[in-house]
Length: 390
Image 1: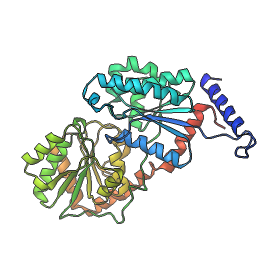
Image 2 (image 1 turned 45 degrees about the vertical axis):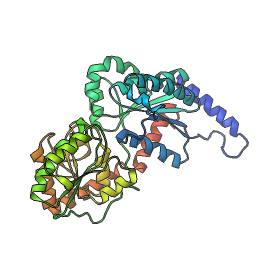
Image 3 (image 1 turned 90 degrees about the vertical axis):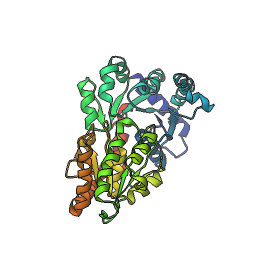
Image 4 (image 1 turned 60 degrees about the vertical axis):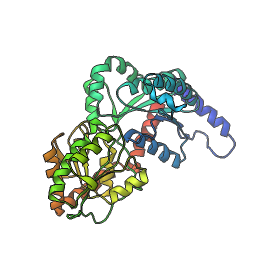
């Protein structure tokens, strides 16, 4: 028996003893695992932060014991956040003791992981501490730059990855990348909250005053500038069209200047980061979701649009072709191609049958990512790494 599983059985025995005679737990009945979910939280909002939040909220709603360990709590005092290098050290000084204490009371550490220095700063410590504490560790790895990261740092990262009881990725795209580096992983997809991002019936696209939305963090890898330039071409043919860019990030000033230089004026709106509720409202008023990212894995923004009945035009990078099929559930274009993006948007605007078909077939894709579909996969995996399989 592995040390992790032995430790879990010891914890389960203690829990059974604590409830013996209470009538709350029959002899031999399997208790639910207690989790530590370790990952980023908003702000800033982003795909991983949203998945962390949803996982914690949904498990807690089912009565599962979950401890959330944020890897990005606010800096105190705030001025530390302006000191590169120092801020990472300060954060680690607080992060490691919190992880150490949390692992004392859980069975499974569910670690949300990414590429780059984030891996070494926030995924490696709980993996090492989990081994010392004999707690089962699942690495939930996400991020479109995995190949580049493993090329550069695989020699240092792979030994720690192999310490995990399981590595989970959200797409077949990442599974293929990890396999090429000799790492076996399991696919469990992202979660889409269909209670918030609800299907609208019937789907419709306004041809006179269509509303196009971009819902990404404003970083260079997401290439929102191409979306703005494509919108200029759309706006020339459909003067009533508007573009709403929902997101924050370092590229905001440059994007605002670009929109002004292109003479788009009030046709482009920058909303900043939106709450989940306001984001759902944005999709429900949208006609097309445009994504022009250059690097991606499984963007939540596409899932949210599909669930909301909004036709999607997107670049075919990273894991996106694993999510949607060109001309069936989305229109896919090459990255950086302004004219192709504009042409695809105009095609959806001018062909109602195409727009409705994309929306309806996209809805069927979104169903695969509902909590009811995904929860069984996570629960089965928790039980497997704990040796609780029947």
